[in-house]
Amino acid sequence: MSSSILKRSWNHKSLQNPTRLFHRLLSSFPGSRFHNSTIPNHNQSVSDAFYPFPAKKNYGFSSNFHENWKIPSGLRFSSSQAAAAEAASTSDGLTVERIIANNWVIYDESESDWKSHASSIARSIHLIKKRLRWKKLIPKLELLSEQLDKPDLWDDPARAGKISREHGSIMGKMKEVNAFEQELFEHIDMIKLAREESDAELESESLKALLELRSHIKEKEIEALLAGEHDSCSCFIEVQSGAGGTESMDWASMVMQMYKKWAEGRGSRVTIVDEMPGEIAGIKRATIKVDGEYAFGYAKAEVGAHRLVRISPFDSNKRRHTSFASVAVIPILGDAFSHVQINESDLKIERYRSGGAGGQSVNTTDSAVRITHIPTGVTASCQNERSQQQNKSSAMSVLQSRLDQLEMQRQAQINSEHTQSLTDINFGSQIRSYVLHPYRMVKDHRTDYEVSDPDYVLEGGLDGFILSFLSASLDKNEDEDI
Image (cartoon, rainbow, N blue to C red):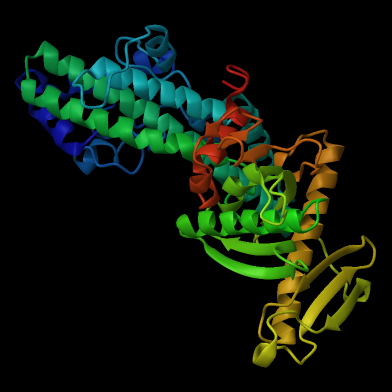
């Protein structure tokens, strides 16, 4: 709630007694103990855990109103209990679930209808909780809290750091959602109060604040799609041509260009790590590095086989051809994550002459590097840097990410968990078809999302497909994780 709204309500003629305002707002805080609480006197204090407003906001009260209070006996919460409070409501008992059950019509944002705004916000909160797997977060937070309390935790600094980061991440997500709920109920209470007192100005200000919350929380719906452990990481995108010779190599090149334009359109930095050109046209395979916020979270939706149907430009008889290209996406885990240990003795390093243009631009030195991890057989190569040392460094980065991915896949199999980003690619189950003849359409077979303008998609217009897939993946079971 904005400070101006609360200042107005504080100075309202019917609220000169602070007890009345405090009880109106306090009654919406979860737990029957709060509803029957008495207001402490000026010598007591209440910590932020008891203060009934979202943290880090100035609501116009003097600092003495909350800084010099103390939590009454028996009202202290553990961190997870405080974050998991789910029974927040308005002063008359209106909750997110009840707002949704009321089925209030949701109008366009331009309409000044507080029930419409409240219904939209409530549904967004419900959706965010589902995408965050809310019911699973609460016991997980309790478990992490218990582990953090163990005296021997920091005997293993790497494990302790991982637990601490995960605990902080979950706490931050849950507190943010709880803050949205509390802010929604405060705005509703203020609107009802303004109507009781016939204060049109206060009602207008509260309605405006409710509309701002509605717009803001829509952005959070998309962020909740990217709640995976590695979604915030940068990534490598690898494209490889399928069976079909020159036709498929040309298609693989088109797919790689599509991802470059998509990534650059999102403001990410794109670097070519490795590229093996085809004999006549296109590429046999290529790898790019995408540095940007949530690059892996978005790009993981593209893992799989991509199918093209068109009149081949390489067929003199102008026949229709079907081509395939496979796409793999590998997260680049930061220093905060545990990496597979690579021993120098396990590496086979080969140096060879980089490919490229002929004539004066021909490369006459063995600067390209291929590294093989002998125990696993995993290889990585780079030939696009200026020096052999730079190529080796880039190849090692790719190798590290591939080995990390293998370890993540092994752990996922042990835990019987399905990880979309690690799904095996095979050409018998394409995820998307790009049809240029006899009609024009791009269709995702996982979600049935389709676009009638293939040129737009091949120029990097992938966000619709990506968001559709991420939404469908998380939202398929309506009430599973609420």
